[in-house]
Length: 307
Image 1 (spheres, rainbow, N blue to C red):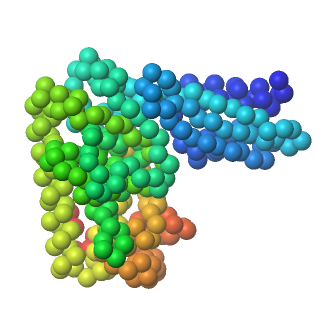
Image 2: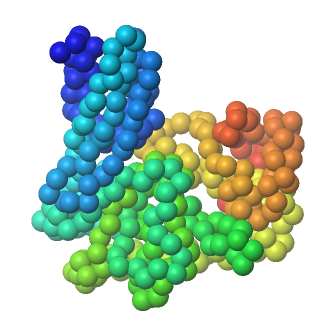
Image 3: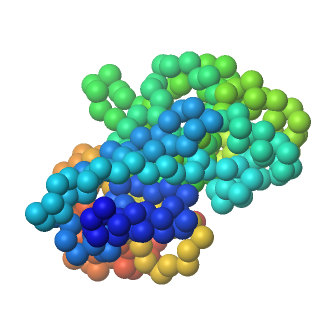
């Protein structure tokens, strides 16, 4: 075995110990930071739906003056009893036995950025729990244009309203970044809601929160000019993109301008122009697609009546 290959194996052992799983960007960054002679990395990520086997990450590393080296790395499936996202979800009150049962009765998949989780019009067969990443819930109009309804973060249950109402999905869901999403079939999920009445109370509260957000958005679109709506949307997105469990003063909002325009409810060109205005007023800074809020107080004044 070549010395570089041995180096790769040692690095992979460290990754295996320190990470439950990781996305393509993380793996690329880790390898480039630890190997001096890497010139090219090919990575294919896949998650096996068979709950009795571990998901795999397949990747290849090419060195200068050496043939391509192929690697397949097994990664651990998220375990419900030790899941850090559990505290953010409706499953936080479950006992150890039921958490283990939940872990054995779920499937877990890795979704690349931009992949569809479910489509509008399909019949829900269970519930999706967002373990890692961010997802947009959106509807497509008659003209084919997307309208983002809401953004979901870690711990969110996707498609819960349609499942509880016994109807087809009224919107689609797609990942905004590399994500890990668990799926629980509806019979087991309903079994849990019957056993834990507090879950029902929390779900009702969550649905009420969704309704209030929808009402606020309708009022905002009807009564506020685009400039105020954009400032309000940036403040909301700042909460969505804040890293969980981390105390940070500033962090980036990474979102395509088209998606931002869909959230605000205006044309992409208008959003781009207003973003440059905000930048000139030192309310935000822009680095490519990333936006950082530099004057939150000023944005709140621009948004008006933002809590």
